[in-house]
Length: 378
Image (cartoon, rainbow, N blue to C red; front, side, top):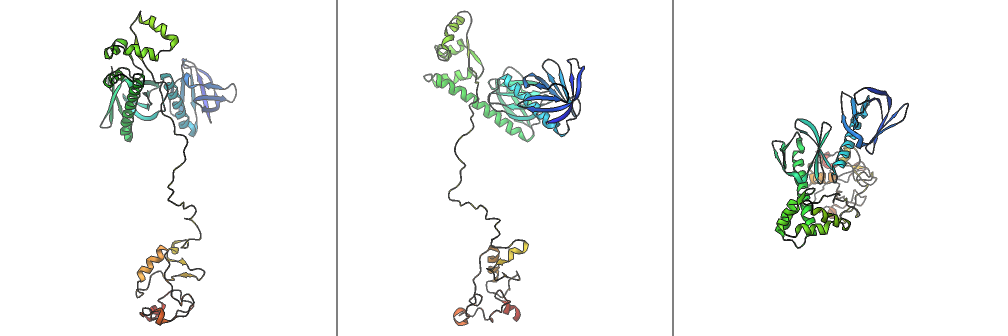
């Protein structure tokens, strides 16, 4: 909801009413609730155009020529304008019979800013309040060259689309994918109706009976003598069969099929997949009982089971055998091996140190690691 100043305009531009009120867009319906007076509801199918006649103002023109001008919308102006244009495009797609969910692109067509929406069966371009529908049955393809997309249209000039930016390749790929999918659905539909028809004949018939295009009965009978009669017998409702026979006696028949619903369905059911071999590590990264203490100095200080922390100097004594390896072990959290004297047990150099690698005195109570005597000796 947004508070705005509004003006109701007659078809000629004369002001009919002015004031302030609350503006909302819900379900594509624009609703104005003035401070005094009745509310005004504008359904999307009655909106002819949404423009910006001047900065920070929005003009909503209805199909009968009347208009609603909104100004002083504040920060909600951009959101309201986007919602109005989405509702306008949705109404245009409904009138055009577009099928499926659209993928939207912003580009330039014929020098004017435009919004392109790619549906399952058509491309709808909106520019300057005008909408143009290009069914996939009339699009031959799209080619990209120097960030300019040229769309081939049957019976007309190519449509040049520019300023797609980084989405140029995405637009061309999506349009080509939707074109191939539409043609594939037509071929699959005819194959289900005419399973006994030869593959080459099915392909030729699918080329004539593109989605939304009617082919003459004579052209279909040129593929197979009984093709049009078979299609009429299969696809015609029983209550209309007599009317078609009467119509065939007075005019040339044409047969066509139109997709009316999307074949895309969202996935349902199932559950998120996870690797059963991986054990969840929930809540173990920030546990206060970890191997190292917090802070920058904790990288070299390991909890020693209530006996303090070691080492007091993080740089190992160079005369320790394998001292540098022990330093790496400390950073990686691998506990070092303890001598018997560190564990409070009797120290016996003959049995505990037969190679004489630690010819040092027993550490006193203030020494938490081996090598203090070596440091004192240096």
